[in-house]
Length: 231
Image (cartoon, rainbow, N blue to C red; front, side):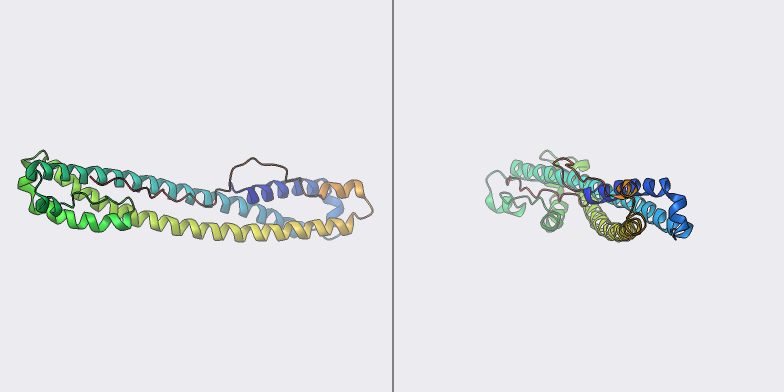
């Protein structure tokens, strides 16, 4: 849970306890059941929206991990194709250039897709040669399927990132609503219990304190875009 939301939820829980302790007196002065229901509803809504936002973060992380695994698999598949080409053509630079031997294999989907699209055609045309130089038909089939899976995984990850952003906006809206209700409730208490400091202290915000060195986890960290060496 993000620190700012974590604090707001804890603070509103403590504030609700103060309201409960002084329920009868506050109700007599205008803090009726409807107003209490609005406060409780805002508090529960934020908890629900925060849970949904964290689920969206987890979904993005899972899809990014799936994408990363596919990128590694394709990287290895390309190395296999290149090694088979080297086995077939030795130091024939013209033939090796056909397989893009020596070029860096990208680690980003955006740059990897055009390389895979190109090599898919080369592999199809050179299947007979590759099969005689270390690759199996299964290897060749897996190269094509891994590329298609990467395209699907990339689309799923991009969609998950959009859903995460939408969930964050909804969560922040819910936080604003609860924050407003917390402020209004405290102003009510300050007006009503101004001559009763021993009661008014119950309505004070909880201390924020130190919550460790971790960062808010509203968004998953972006995947590293390391670039493996050319082979």
